[in-house]
Image (cartoon, helix red, strand yellow):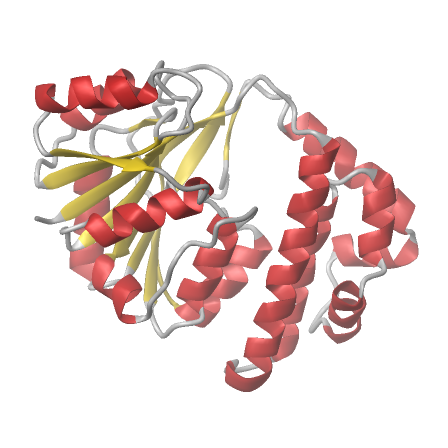
Amino acid sequence: MKVSIVIAVYNSESFIISCLDGLKAQTFRDFETILVVDSRSDDNSVNVCRLLAPLYSGIKVIIQDDDGRAGGARNIGLDAASGEYLWFLDVDDYFSECFLEEMVRILDNYNADIAVCNFFYSKERHFVTTPEKYYKMTLQDSHKAMLELNDGRYSTNLFNKLFRTEMLRDNNIRMTKRYCEDYEFLRDCFEQPCTVVYYSKPLYTYILSDGTRSSGEGNRIAEEDIRIFGETIQWAKVSWVGDIGDLYESGLTHILRSLTNADEECFLRLADSNTVRDATKNSGYTSVEIILFKISKRLFYKIGRNRRMRKFSEKEFLFDQDV
C-alpha cells in the first residue's frame, strides 16, 4: 500500500460523497481511505460513512468516541494507516485528479520526507484549474522549511502535504487536541532532520466557508500561535543550526499576522507578551511589517486587519502567487 488517506469527519454528511468521488477519480490508484467519524456529529455522518464504504474500494470506517477534536481523529488514522505515505485530507475541499500521482512522484524522485504543493482558496465549491505551465520544485532541509513555514511560504495547513509515514512514526510525531494543531504538527516535523520538497503547482482548492471567524476563536488561535513559537525558540536555543535571528524574524512575522485574527484588545495584550518582545528584540533583520509594528502597534493592527479582510473577501485567490 503506497498512500493512506486520513479524513476526519464531523457534521459533514453533505460532503462525503463528493470527496469519495474525487478520490475515485484519482489517476493514482494505490491507496486506502480511512474515514475517522466523530460519533458526536449532529447530522447523519456516521451512518452515511457506513453505508457508502461498501460502494467504494479500500475504505475503512473508524468511529471516534472521544473528545479529541480533529487532531485526535488524525492520530487514530495515523495509527491505522498501512501506507508508505500519508495524506490528511479535508472532507469538504476539492483537489486535482492528479494530486496523488504528482505528489507521490515528487516524494519518490527526491527521496523526500514531506511534499508540499500550492493551492487555491475559493468561495465556490469546485476545483480551480490552471493552465499547464512549468512549475518550480524546491528541495529544502528542515531548518529552511521551518523558516518558510513562519514566513508564510508554506501554509500551516496539512491538506496540501504528503508525509512519509515512517518519518512520523519514527519520531513519534502526533497531533495535539487543541487549536492550531496543524501548525504545531508541522513545527514538530521540521524540528526533526528531514527533507521537504515544495511544488509551486496548485493541486488543491480549499473551500472558504461563508461564516466569519468569531473574535473569541481568533483570540484563541493567536494565543496558541504565540505558545507554539515560544516552545520553538526554547528548542532552537539548543538545536538550531545557523543564525537564530532568522528564526526569530520569521516567527515574529507569523505571530504578527496571526494577531490580526484577534480583536484589538487581545492584540494589544498579546503584542506586549514576553514572547513577542523577545522576538522583536532578537530578530535577525527588519521587515516592513516589523518596522510598522515597532512604530505603532495600533496602526499595524488596523492595516493588517484591513489587509486580511480584503484578501479573504475575494472570490478565489492563489496561496503562493510566486509561480
